Length: 533
Ligand code: NAD
Image (cartoon, protein in one colour):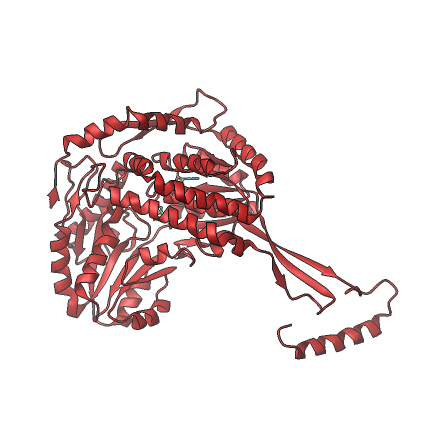
């Protein structure tokens, strides 16, 4: 394993970023969190790579969330009156600014999350793609649609989509920019205000993105960011928002969805996964190995749609495993704030310990480590080698539970029916991948896999990056979808407007009932014969 010691420049560069222009920017971003009480308790944001203090953000309380929701509500009334096309132009300007000023946010993402610069850049790509997609397509998704009326000619009907009001977003630490802002982009362009609670470990990228949106023309106050403890701030958002979009663990999502049910507000839940890759006998071995590596170890495995299980046909298994071990051994771990490392740091000791607990349990029960398996303190306190296990059995903790770290299990299978049964034998159903020499055979298998996205010859980016298509989880992996039409219409209420001309549909008082019923029966029979009515 090539784990280069922390180059002096990592510490130096981090310190330099935290004293110069970037430090001023961070202080300004933190001031955007409007808190009623300026003496609010502070939460520290530290670099996972160097441990250095990056920022301290207020631990907001319930009244701060109430004030944020009110500020957003005030701005939303006027924003909802803007045409969808005018709102969409803000997203397209944001897209241009984001690409032009990406360096700023790459630094911030790396400082707060410890991920590699390439993984940080994936966040910029995903955010730009979402801004471009909704910037171009939101007006079409939101346009008023003519619907068939109750009676031809006499009744005309239209379907409107009106914003729900203020949408709440509770987001995780693993993709601070993508998760912090992309779902909110869809809600904003649909005419809503937003209140966003990023994870307290990683609030800066979201703060930066909302400042940039204001520079792109978003009315001040419409987007509010509140930082603080999950149950306190997140709990208040669930009580006050008109819709909740939650991204995080299944355990938290289940609790919050129950509360949304009690309040009778809509919600969308993007939760955990135990995603599987299927390598068919006709797959190109080298491509499948590369897919396994990028799909399992990107962001140090801390990605909801990353692969944690790989099922390889017995005919390819030995070659696959030896090539995988060889290639994984070449990955470069490092915390540099440049483009030199393949894999960055894990976010926290908690996440590191969860990964090592799964590994130790599996090894104690008989699994074999074929690559990695050790922490890499020379690279930083929270680095862990990308690790591959074979011989995992159902009694091991990692077999069914999400690890959310750089730990991958590889299993052989004999026939495809058996492999699909194993893949579906999971509480989760977020993402899956099939590697095959034939896209049409892989497509034919996809509907048999119970997962919200199925990527062919790619681990996750093909489906996640196809913003025109819905993305989300089946089973315990979620409710609702982001992206595409569903990813924007969920932030609206459907409203039907219908107008009646000439004759009323309901009889006037005093109209003889029996002749009325006879005429209507005749009419219903006639309508049955007219196509498309
Ligand atoms: P988590 O559920 O602990 O936290 C997620 C967010 O919820 C954080 O902002 C946290 O502060 C907040 N929160 C925690 N408890 C809360 C409560 N009681 N009330 C309101 N808010 C609360 O999840 P995590 O461990 O930080 O994130 C990792 C999990 O997220 C993994 O399971 C991963 O698979 C999942 N995830 C899913 C997606 C997806 O799109 N499906 C994306 C990223 C992460």
